[in-house]
Amino acid sequence: MVDLIGDIHGHADKLEEILAIMGYVKEAGVYQHPAKRKLVFLGDYIDRGPKIRETLQIVKSMCDAGHALAIMGNHEFNAICFHTKDKVKGGFYRKHTVVEIDQHIETLRQFRNYTQEWEQVYLPWFHTLPLYLEQDDFRAVHACWDDAHINWLETNFIYEETQGQKRISEKVLVQYVAKESPVYEVLEELLKGKEFDLPAGQEFVDKDGTTRKSARIKWFQPVEDRKLHKDVFLGIGEEFGELLLDESIHEALHRYDADKSVFFGHYWLKGKPTDALAKSICLDYSVAKDGHLVAYRLDSKEFVIV
Image (tube, rainbow, N blue to C red):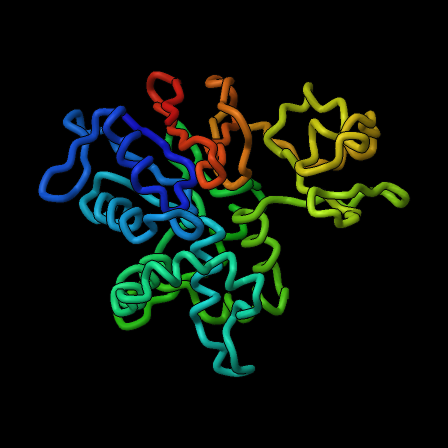
């Protein structure tokens, strides 16, 4: 019996609320279910929200006790890069410019008086988080399931043992930031999703006023529902979105055709989920932007929303 929860982004109050609704109780400081249900967390535990430290305490304690599993989100991977020094080129594997600091600022603030805990407990834990899960009856990934990437990870190990601890290899970080080898594409797309370069002459203006010639793909949209640009591209303008989808684009876009259900977060969807029987189900409904925290009960095939 499995429950899955989407992006939390430091909203511990919402997390505790949804756990209570699903019947989880706290015993000896750790949430667990009387019926031995297990939770799967889909990544992005940190940044943005008001109770990041409390969120990490809940999630990690459940994992440590065997009551939950957690996968890596792009924010956890970004944190690894942000805080890991580049011993060759200097600086860090993620830049410390205004953009990167602004995205990570709430985590930095909330751990200002708990730096030892951050550096010795949570950052090492981020290193151990898997990029995906595959169980008998479901799959889980933070942003996009791609069989080719999963197969690549099966034979190219990105983790190493350092002083008895499992960590993402520093060689992987070097290759990622240099965009060398398949490492960059695999990590970028599993954790952040796929983008599609639009044909020559096609472009749109995003919500920030930037003209873009590539767009993030709704890879999870069923093929039969891919009629207009808005059906397959995220964040595009209204006028561009109403254009009919060219057949060449339709055929080139990534799709999920497996029978096994896959669950993911990342996409900041609006409103509430409705199709509980879909094969690809997003559980990120923008809790950090006045939206909802969403869970899914695998056995009963129903959403829990707060």
